[in-house]
Figure 1 (cartoon, one colour):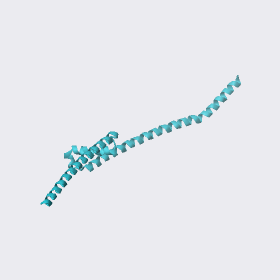
Figure 2: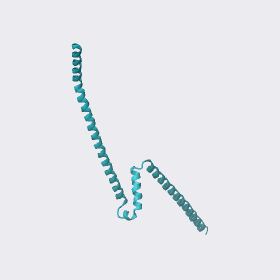
Figure 3: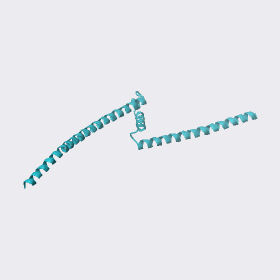
Figure 4: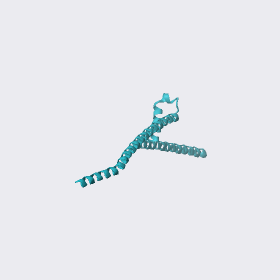
Amino acid sequence: VEKLKQQVGKRNSEQQRKARDRSADTKRMQDLQRQVKELEHILRSRNPNSLPALIYAAATAADEENAASSRTSPPSQINVLLERRIQRLESELESHDEEAKRTLRTMEQQFHRIKVSHTWMPTSIAYLVTFRFLLVCSI
C-alpha cells in the first residue's frame, strides 16, 4: 500500500512538474513569437524595400487572399512578387543606362566644341598680333 502511495505521489509530482514545464514552455514560445514580431517590425521600418519586408508583405497578402491563395502556394506568390521587382529594377537600370549614355554624348559634344575652339585660337591670336603690329607700324 505504501509503495502504491509513493508511486501515485511520484506520478502526481511528475505530472505537476510536466504541467509547470509546459506552461513555462508555452510562456517562452509566446515570448519568442513576440520578439520575432518586434524584430520583423523593426526590419520593415528600417528598410521597407528590403527582401525580408517584401517576403513578409507577400505572406500577409497571402493570408488576406484566402480564396485566391488556396490555388497558388505562398512560395510561388513570393516568386511572382520577386520576379516583378526584378523586372522593375531591370527597367530602372535600363533607363539609368540610357540617361548616362545621353549625358556622356552631351559631354563629348561639349568637349569636341571646346577642342575645336582651342585649335583655332592660336591661329586667330597670331592673326590678331600680326594685324596690331601692322597697325602700329603704319602709324
